[in-house]
Length: 259
Image (cartoon, rainbow, N blue to C red; front, side, top):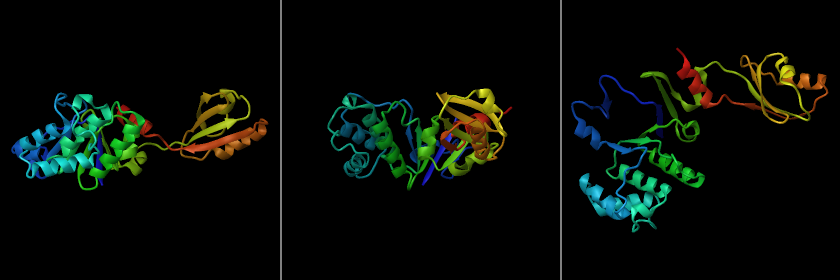
């Protein structure tokens, strides 16, 4: 699977796609690219099947009817293919957008915020569609939704002020920043922030809700033992204690805020 995410995409100089120079052979390049923009432009008065057949003619797709039927099935539009696009929900319109982007069987699929505005059920379905297409396509997913990145992408490119500041596998991106230990802990009674900040190794304490705190260490040192000792010394009972991974949001902030 090749699903890549890019933040604030910008390019300078020579750009090549599938071995072709974008400036010298733009038409050939476009034939190899499928694109779904953030604001999915559709002809709302056209029927789903009619719209896809229209685009198949524009792309000069061979066996148009067969290809359209294949795409309708692959994105789950069988029951909606005879409806007007304007009558579809946002989720189904996104499916139509994915179908049109894949209609000419491109080598590269570019998706800009493809799940924006979807409800939780639609979100899961569209994610699964993207993963399915990613099995034999290179997908460039542009988004600022970190949960989307973690759920879909296997490689992350972060661009800040036109410069690439990270290009790593999703599983390795956290190594780009200084590791910190983040512990979520719940006590049986209230405790002051000042006392929590006095725990050896604790850099900051943030109250999540009554009796629940997020404690962050200065380094990647495990501070759970110190928290347990603190609780015992102060006659506190630890009801729950969980180590949390450094969030992708924090990684993004760290990498894009450096001067």
